[in-house]
Length: 193
Image (cartoon, rainbow, N blue to C red; front, side, top):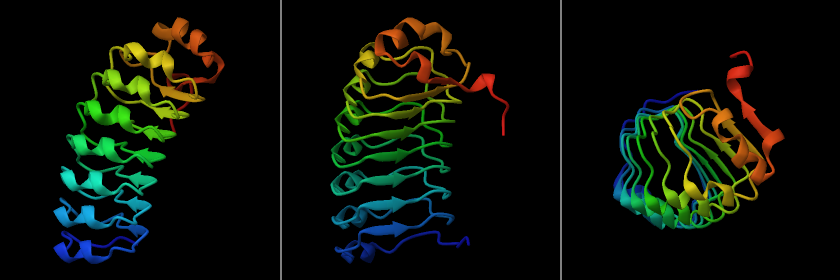
């Protein structure tokens, strides 16, 4: 069921032992700065809210393994997001992101990243340092090229691109070098759901 929470109290930061927090399907537009004191948090679901930005303190959530920010109104991410060293799954689909911070490349444990349906025109060069990345969703963006170091994503098993400006076809040689040619999914070839 959906709730109608529009704000969280600063006192939420006192829940120091909290490990899982599910706030999806609310009307939150911002998070209090005290959010960064939830040091034990491992799973945070903020899907389907109205978040426009995240506090810098989000970078203090160093135990976080799963972060779902899908279906919000995010236009940018703080540089501090790169400090989420334990993060394995990051869902940012259906937002308004136009770029990612360079610190994104510090997310060394990241295995699943969904950036579908944003306004991204480029990915930071540091993207090639996401050594653990296995699943990458980039459909519905405005990407015209992939980062130069993209070929270093040796763990990449599934790459989802639509046939936008970048398309799968313009990068077939790179995918061959990666050894993932047969694992690349061109969603323009499949019927839409």
